[in-house]
Length: 432
Ligand code: GLU
Image (cartoon, rainbow, N blue to C red; front, top):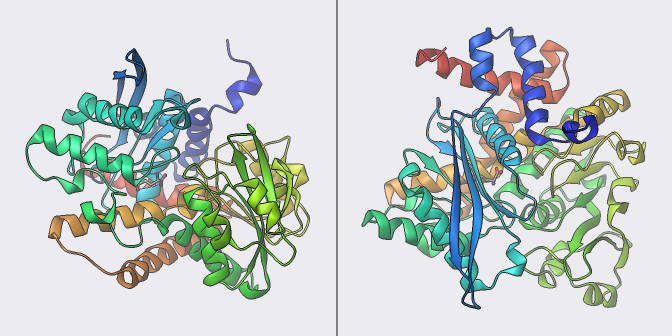
């Protein structure tokens, strides 16, 4: 039996609840609504891995292909110790709405392996990554389902996965996976794309609220790939100041919030951060940074809050700590806000840029990566960023306008835009 509290934090139940609200506004018919509430297919695999000490450990993995009405399934793979099939289902649902809201010819999927990548040697990580692809090779492909990086995975892991897939099928197939290193067919601009997309969405929200970006401040949770580039672009594209970033310290097994008078320098912090997003505390303190409690980022007096780490951080318990100064919540993470907290944000009048809109920059450039692979051609970073800006800006305004027109919160507005597009494709195919 799950208690009410635990059930209310189950990401998949949250994703279904969010869809239900939009289905009500759209008056979706029952069969169609039911079809969109569940993944179309999912794979549960066991992956045996020879560990460095000679023993065999069996890992559990998932790939959820949520919906492919608009095109091949698309979405990252997470390596996380607390991964569950329901988390992967929720993330796969959000990928379906994400690719639709930015109008890509793709569906939604997600993968995960229950493991702690920080405890695995590079050799063990490689064997695990290759084992996952051996288990799933028949189910993926550029025209079936296209994985990418997410929490706990990176371009090197994508390289091993690509190599394993190409070895199995016996020919080059770069479009099977995105977020690859550039020499293997990765795209210019992919690494910073999610963070840049977040900042483009914030730029549009600030304009809608009549605020001058250069005089704004932000506080960020996380210092992994998304947070690092959100911080960099917040300074360099908007000219605003980032007052804090918070990150998990895997040596101390706790989080810290790093602040500095006048704002942090993300490019400097990047030089003292490991591949798992942990800032070296001693070096940061030496450079004049103060290490506050891990959750301090949420209560700072800033204009923009950017959760860029994990799900369920803004909850009924924590939402009250948000300062009265905050005008925008930019959800760079997937699923950072619970429905209970959403209601409070609405009452406070905070402008929410919902996750699957806010962080769609990553998958958008993943799509550009696939297009370049198909043409066996490269665009430069200026071309990528120009196309990304176009997609993000258009999606932002579609959501903003839908929310205004229907007098609903932005999250519901985003669902209205995305679900309507997926529903149309489902109906055209005659599925419902
Ligand atoms: N993992 C990223 C996301 O959640 C990117 C997915 C992709 O590029 O396919 O959007």
